[in-house]
Length: 253
Image (cartoon, rainbow, N blue to C red):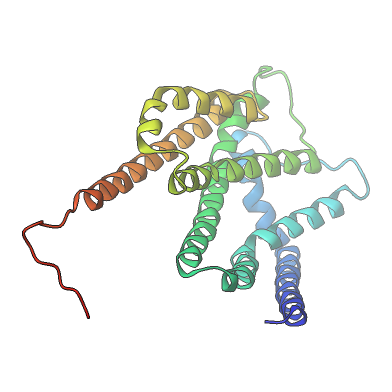
């Protein structure tokens, strides 16, 4: 394909992606009421016997927060579409095996990111219950709208990005830089490092968030080790297949 055709193809893919994102942003802005109640649920879970209303201190705080949530929600909701557009533009230049791996990595990265966001959403309420009530019953917590959603977005993004860890491990195993034997030797050290990374990366200091993220990363690491073991066994069986020296070989003339 000539260079001009590549540019036209890129422009078409970008227009489709941007258009889908704009549609998603408009839809999330229009569905603000159910989206707001859904995202506020962890805060309500942390205050089961108190009001879970959020406070606005600035004139534009509510509008800015609504626009920010709509923008993020539009990007996340339409991620399968614009990720497909990116893959459709890149994969024609790849070989057959590379196309298969590229598609698998894109799909796996998307699924892992959404799984991380889901786990982060489930764990935020438990962490907030400790953080908001650590000062005792004589303190009333009044969270502002923008501060709460900034904290929630940071937590969900952190969990989503952290769950991309297996994609890197599997890639290093496929290229031969991280073999199964090496992963097995690093087993205990990796468990410690993953919990340490979870403790450092989580913005909250509660033990629930730390344990949720660290435990999930350890489970993902164990799954990567199991996948590397399966791949290592399969390669060993293929390497042990030898031709019988007494069997004549067919030679095409």
